[in-house]
Structures are given as structure tokens and as C-alpha cells.
Image (tube, rainbow, N blue to C red; front, side, top):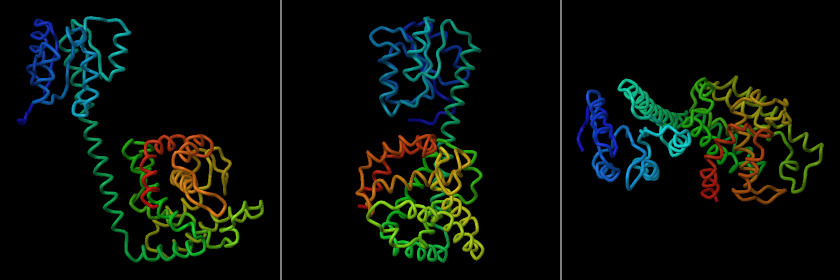
Length: 360
């Protein structure tokens, strides 16, 4: 393989005249390989990976559609942009080509200016996609590096507090660790997929968010052990007492915020503690917030919290499987949970299940 300064295009057409015309149109701007068959294309692909392929549809032995299926099935070539070239103009062919993964569809005969502009646009899109993936990968790496830099003193204080919660509620300790991992997974997938990107960009010191989730149930310090560890269903009165852990948690964190140095950490923790039991349909607590009135951090924590509750043992229930828990989360989209975040959860579901498996 050699370093190429110009981008490479492979033009595939069984008509020699089309190959000659196409190459002449493109040769001043690109490195062009004019190939008369699909067989020659695949032979050249073994040595050179082009930046874009111009592919005729109607060819003997193997059609352009057949070539496209093979390219998309191979991870090595699936990301190469393909523009179909054809003399046919029927809409059904165009739809079929786009459905197979082509980025564009140009009918012959074509003008030099039009073809060059189409190619330029798709190469620009591809370049921007690569740059965005690189940016996201670097961003995620930076977050993970900064997460490890949280001060030892603050971590020690938080650990003591969470141990206090665990001592009173035997199910909370492991829950805290797992939900941190779940929130981390959701945020990573959101960044990769550019979900709620504008809001994420407003988060200062994003590396503090996952550690701050440790305090989401801190208000349980003030809940009676008889209620926390009751083996049966809570009474209505006991349920109302249990619900107060959100507001009590906010007050505790506010006190810590006044005395602590890293106020942003506590602001994140306060938001999460106060809003992770709100529901998308407005039927949650403590404030009955609805939809995007609920802070994004609270909506994230809601999914992590419920998923872990479903898959874990509780005094009043046995755990259910990851698969059954996933179905419950999916069913809650638009009622209990933000439907956009449920889509993010669906992509991370296998990783959630791995957390359970590895914590066993």
C-alpha cells in the first residue's frame, strides 16, 4: 500500500466508452481506476481501498445490486460510499439502490459538473463523519481520564456516606455501584450517537456526573429500617414516607454543597437525587414534572435505577431476567421514561446485561 495525496475513485462499468468518458471527467481531480467488471473491482479491492465507488447497475454475470450486497456484508468495505450509475430511470430501481446502501443515484448520460459536485459532496460527508467519530472517541477518552482525577478526599467522604446508606439498606450498596455503570454507559452512547448533544455541551466537568450518582439515594438515611427492609408490600402511609427520600436527599446535598469545595459535583448530585423518580407522563414524584421539564440527569438515572431494581433481589421480590427487564423499560417509553433515552438504552442493553453478569 502507498500513500496517496489524491482521493481514489473506482469506476465500474462494462461499457468501454462509459469508462473512458468517466475517467476523463474525473482524472484531473482524483486518482481514477476504470474497471470493466465486478470481478476486476474485487481484485483491485484486495490491494487498494478507494474513497468512493461509482458503480454501474446493469452488468453481465454480476449486477451492481449484487456487488452492493457483497460490499455491505463485508466490514472492510461496508463504509465505502457507493454512487450508482445507470441509464435506467425507473423509480423502483432508484429506491432499491438506496435501500441497499447507496449514497446517491446518477443517471447516464451525466454532465461532468454534476458528477463532480455529487462526488465532492459525498466525500465531504464521509470526511466529516470520520472527524466526528474521532472527536467523539477523544471526548469519551477525555471524560474517562478526568473521572479518575476526582480528589481522593472527596471520594473518601462520599464513600463513607454511601457505606452509611448501605449499612441501613443491605440492597443499596451494590445498587449504587451498578447504577453508576449504567449511567456511564448511557452517557457514552448518547455522545457517540449525538443524542441531546446541545444539552450535553452545557455540562461543565462532565466527568463529575457519574460519580455524583452515588448520592441519588442518600435521603434513605432518614427512612426507617423497618420500611427500607420490609419483606412485604408497603402500606400507603409507608410509601409516602419512602417517597420523601428524594426531597430529604436534596436537603442533605445542599448542606454538603455549602461546605464542600466542588460545588458542581453536588449540584449534579442534587439534581439526580431530586428528579430520578419523576416520570415522563408527569405521574412521578416529588414534583410531578412532565417530559423535558424533568432534568436530563434525572431521566437518565430513572432508567438506570429501575433497571437495577428489576434485575436485583429486594426484600419484597426476586430478581427478573435482563431480557424481561428490557421489555419493561421498552414498554415504559413515553410514560415512565424519556422515549429518546429508551432508544439509547436499547443500544446499550447488552452492556447492561454484562454488568449484571459480572457483578454476580
